[in-house]
Length: 115
Image (tube, rainbow, N blue to C red; front, side):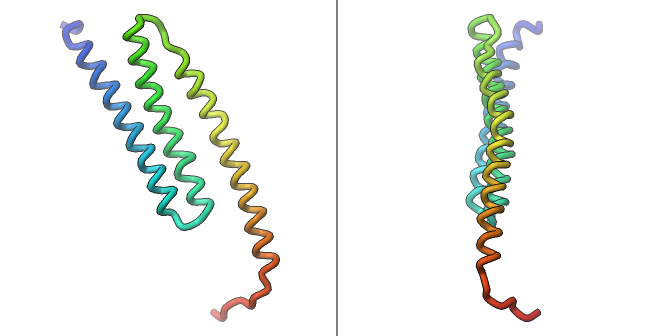
């Protein structure tokens, strides 16, 4: 009885992961456009898109494992690389943005507005 529903369950699982990943990627893209500050714009795609791409790659891993009847590890390597490099690149961009912002604040000699 379980073997009758296995293709349907796998199709639903794969489709659900692809939809979930697509929603995360879309939310990350919208956040990058809508957020007002550089640091907020940096946060949205780093977090949401990483989760979205991970969900899509897990769906791909499941699909190709079922199709070829052997584990598909290419996607796993991409996920590991993504999870290792995304936080590091976000940290580097945030550090650079902080330095640029500090230079702008230091060189701005305009008086502060009254409270």
